[in-house]
Structures are given as C-alpha cells and as structure tokens.
Length: 343
Image 1 (cartoon, rainbow, N blue to C red):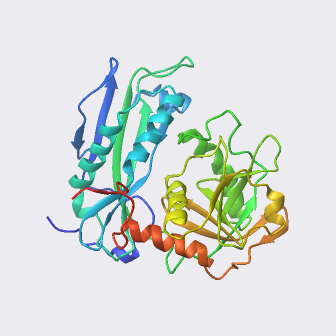
Image 2 (cartoon, rainbow, N blue to C red):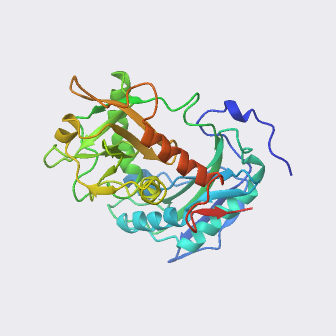
Image 3 (cartoon, helix red, strand yellow):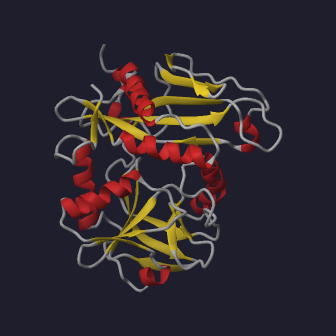
C-alpha cells in the first residue's frame, strides 16, 4: 500500500473517483449491516422518493494526514449528530451516530492511499448522504432508504492564499423561519443555485441572506455561516433558528475563547450595524475553506467595506484560521475528542 502518485499540490476542489465507498440499505424498518464496495453506481426506480420529492440529506467532512503521520478526521461525532437531526426533520430513518463514525473510519481506511501527504494543502473530502430509494408517487415519506459515503481527494480551497472576497446582499430568501434552514437538506442547496449563479454573473463570490420576515437581520451565505470581529478583537456570531449549525463555526467559538482569549457573543446581527462600522473583520466559515475572509459587502450598489481590506485576512481572522487548522493538522493540541484518529 502506498500513497497514490498524484500531483497533490495542483489538484482542484472537485470529484475524483476513488477505489471504495460505503453502502447501507434501510428496508422493513431496519438498516442492514452495510458494506464497503468498489461499485460507484446508484441504480434507482424512476419513481424513487429522492427523485420525486427531494427526500435527501448529506454531510461533509475531511480526513487529513497530520505532521506525525497519522490519518485523522475532525469532530465526526458532530457530523453524525447533525445528520440525525436532518433525517428526523425530513422524516427519514436515523442512521445511528456510532455506525456513522464507524462507516467513516471504514471508508477512509479502504481508501487510505488516497489521503494526501501532509503539507500538500490537499485533503480527503468525505461525503456521507442518505436518500429515499423506493418508488413514491403520493406525497409521503419513502419506505426504503440508502445511506452512502464516498471520498474524493481535493486540493486547497484557496490556491496562493485566502484573499478577501466581495459578497452581495441577496434579494432571495435562503430559508423560511420554520423551514429546513437548520438542517443539511439537499433541497436547501437546490434553491440557492439560481441565486449563486446570479451573484457570480454579477461579479460577486457569494450571497449574504437576510431574515425573510423583516429583511433586517443577517442570516448566512449560500454555503457557510458568518463571523464578525469588532475593534477589540472579540467575535460576534450570528444566531438564528433557520441557519445551519456549522461545525467549523462552533469550533471557532471555542478557539476564540480558549486559545485567543477573545470574548464571543452569539446574537442576532443587524445589517444596519454592519453598515455603521461595528465590525472590522468578517469571514465565512465552513468545512471547505475553514474561513473565507470578506473584504466588502455590496448592498444593491452600496459598498460596506471592512477595515481589514481586500489584500489579506484580518489579524484576528488569521489567528483563528491558523489555530484551527493547526489543531486539525496536529501542530497544536486541541480539545479532547476533536481530532479523531483513523490510522
């Protein structure tokens, strides 16, 4: 067994078929034992529940090689917990949390040669997902489901460093107040595609969504939560019942308090206070990039500029990024249980 001969430093952030994936089927009220298989094809009825009514949810996490040569992933128990919550909201059977973590371990071990070497900037992206698989024509939950995990090596999200981006205030709503914005449902991402394509056509990197009820409060972007840094170096994190509970955001909260000694506040954030200069740094946080620094927010032609500028990450954001990635890669000792050793 040996690491694949790939130009790791130059691969993109996209799908690359690997050797094995994990598959488990739910039928007659229970999950089967699950298998590791080389077959990457999914065969479904034309009337499958996922195709008719979008009954699907997913997760995303990564496996890394640390400085001392271990293969690890970051807080997979929280991904397992979040998928349970997604399944419950979509009337899907829960895939047990302990089995979720074990399945992640199995599929990474089966594809161990695809885990990029330490220091290349590349990682092994892990995508667990679940969907309704039997024919459903009436509007109701499916009776049978499939849970799968595939992995794919991905390059660094930012080549040449994380340059600040410009995002726009969207005219679209991301989620209804009592909808599915708090779970990782595929349908949330489907409805965001038109908005993100429109933003890209207009020259922006992402959308920033406001609360649909008053359109005064900042929610999140199409694929990430937001963090804000004030002049004292303290962190403010947007709080809402209709945004996804980002594992990266929750980890940054602890990093800011325990490692940087910063005060962290979770509360509603008004667009007006951002316009008034309450914050000097802003970032999007998620699995892919950890933190994407924001230099400007465009509100229908009005530019809201952060003092951190458009050249590089702000100093607090950089410390947060360096500390969290240091924990993930084994350079810094993290809280107990954060780094899950696979091999």
